[in-house]
Amino acid sequence: MQESLNKLLPEIYSHMEKEAPREGCGLIVQKSDEIKFISVENKSEDENSFYIDPKEYVRHSIISKILYVVHSHYGQNCHPSEHDKNASKVLGVPYLIVSLPERGEYIYDPR
Image 1: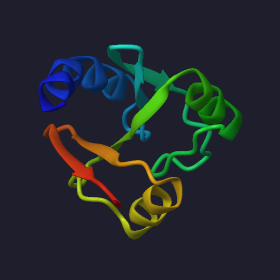
Image 2 (image 1 turned 90 degrees about the horizontal axis):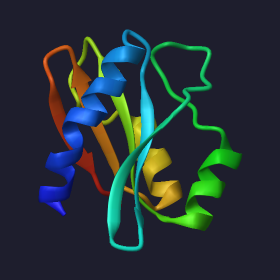
Image 3 (image 1 turned 180 degrees about the horizontal axis):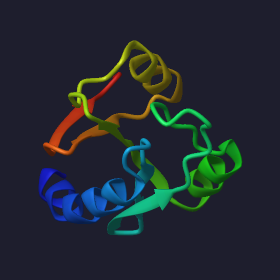
């Protein structure tokens, strides 16, 4: 899995840099044997948080397996906030958090 994540990081960072300074977001999904990153529109009105449309999340969960919820922290470290931890626990899905502009990664797994 780590090898697949490493291959996706350039695409993830590219999307997150385009969204900066707003938090960017997306999903890492598995469909058949393919693991890919899907950029998702951040519906939050606050640039320091993210919100994925529940309908879009459910749509992706129906057609693929969601492996990670991905989002960025701009101008701060990549460690999860309490909100990140709680949301990840509710979904039962790990969060991959990337920080910008210094480029760091952190995986929070609630399981």
